[in-house]
Amino acid sequence: MEEDRARIYERAFLLSPEKRNQVMELWEVQKYGADSFSDSDYVCIYGMPPVEWYRRGIRLLARTTVECVRDSLGKLIGKDVASVIQDVASAMKFAVVDPFAGSCNSLYWILRHVRNSKGIAFEIDRTIFEVTKQNLASLDKDIELVNGDYRSLLRNYRFPKNYLVVVFVAPPWGNALNEITGLDLRRTKPPITEIVDFVDGVYQEHPILWVIQVHQTIDPMSLADLKKRFDWSALRIYNINVEGMKHGVLLGTSRWKPDL
Image 1: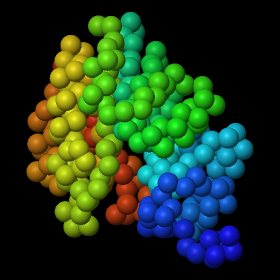
Image 2: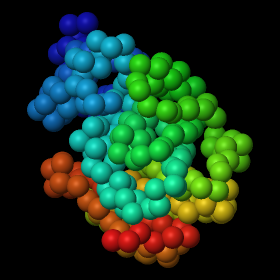
Image 3: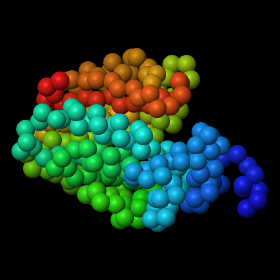
Image 4: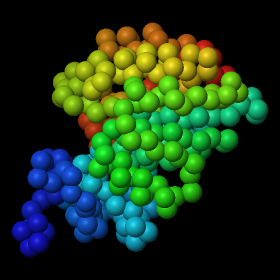
């Protein structure tokens, strides 16, 4: 224990083979925030700082602590989604689909900002699924979490024709992020274009709003290849991290255009 408290809690350690699947203690979450970002409350999720979410029984694996969308980013994503769909007919309902659930915090914030909405999320990793399922039980959002690969299960989840489908796309980046050229959307795992093409084929009778998590620097050819699939698109980069570490979303639509 003393050895753990003495070491630096940074990204590489939390993602290391010996640590990545361990459930984090509260002091470890706070130490990661303090050591890496000079903020012990850095990992705010589900609208709560670490002390509060931990008190309520919410837990995170070490790797999810690093990889989860924090509240500051999730809130901005939710607001942007709401602004795009604000003029959609009031009779329209919304299904929010997340093929790579993780903590489900992105989905949680989108649902907080989107009226008449329900969420469906897929998590292929059994360990992350079990932890997140337990966490969601203490929240007040309509989220169905499914353990398995979205490619084999998504066709089982259909919606009535009066549904607009919002798809949050944030696959593992792996080695797709290059310090010089930025994020290559063709090299995520799986490639984002493959995800978009597959999901679009499943929901081809519905209007879709795509919400694709990106880095502030994006390989331009991969961005152009993705944008040509959409009827409308807009890039949003959020000023909530230091330069070089800012994230954002590419918003895109299929079979409709927002009145902006």
